[in-house]
Image (cartoon, rainbow, N blue to C red; front, side, top):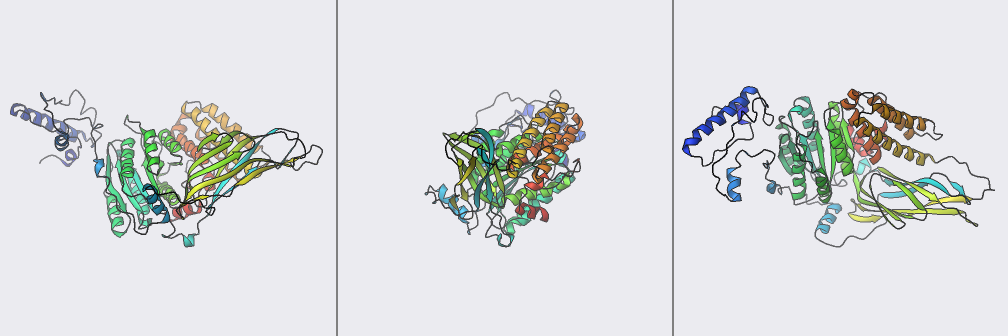
Length: 578
């Protein structure tokens, strides 16, 4: 009763169970000594000072005999001096307490319920918000010549009219916000995160559901998956005010708790996402992230990773984003947290298509398919699987083809036929685009040749793919401390693009990206103080063709504008309100 408030917050407390009376007094006295040392050292819960609680000084309680107990008894009595990493902090069996989805279910929600019930898939429709087009590097190639050539297959999602994008048009969201509340988040960072989450809560529709998971040395779930009606918003906002910082950083525990929320929910909204926000390094040894991401996909959840400040584990978060096929967002200036969070949620609120499969039936030999998404081949057919498309979003697949020699009076060669199948959320049905051909004109050597200038769009996409690869290679040099090699690589790619005959606005923006990367890799200090995270953010953004914000860090060496190339109108609206 006389322990200080600090001692009462210590999460791991030994319990004396069935000890002989002769030993109980000594054990309790030793425990009191430990707690006094924690208070005296000023240690916070989860981050005890090694000096005050060393293995040598801390008492060790080893029962002489331990009777076998049932699992029920173990849960009731608790472990004796169990390692905190092994002790389950949450009872995941209670996580099936999510609120019901609103009765006014969208067609997408109804279709998801039908699929879960084992009902037949809906018929394929040719009407939908996604279209496919193709472009080729050169308009014509002489018939008697074999040549390698580039082309692009472009998916374009329709924009959603803001005047008609109300609650009845937008898909319900399930958002699991996984928030770092370790000691390093104390002060302004945590206050800005709380404000960003409250913004999302306030902007949510009554059909949306939000859950809040926190982690430091262990995970907690301050808010179940709660519907954002008036009562739910009040409960959610109140939970943000109760958040406080302290302890270590175990990202894996936070993600595991969020995964349990996603997997155990009784109902599922059409669009679901886990939003991970952290500013630190994972101090745990658990590294089961690949299996977590596989579970997220099976649960129908995307994962977005946000790293704050220069001290977070950018390599880990970037790897997570790469495996999740989403952008990694580096927030260098903490004041931009709200905009980044809003841009991500604004994108999720505008998803128009899921489970997109781009099918290429190729007549020419495909040498390479440049895309970050999963690619499978069977004979002359290539299939690219893209998780989702936002309204007004564009995705380009760059293909490298071998054009065969043609003889006789052939005037054109069909290189491939492209189409896409996807699940349209507005209709709640599978849709199929019209197939389009990539056709190359063939001429005779004697005929006047058309202007042999490469297509501007194809050149821009080649530059985008090359820059993303260059940033990835430069990042590997930076991680190994080879900063001069990285500088040379970036400078060579920038010079190549500046010397290109076809330079578009996209290409100009990519050159600025390379120049800023060079500045970020001048030394180990600049690399560790944000350079690593900035390059990984840019690399993943250009590969995915998706961004979460247009905020430019104060540490940027130029007025680069690459983020604006990918932010959609729907995302811009959310960012402007944030």
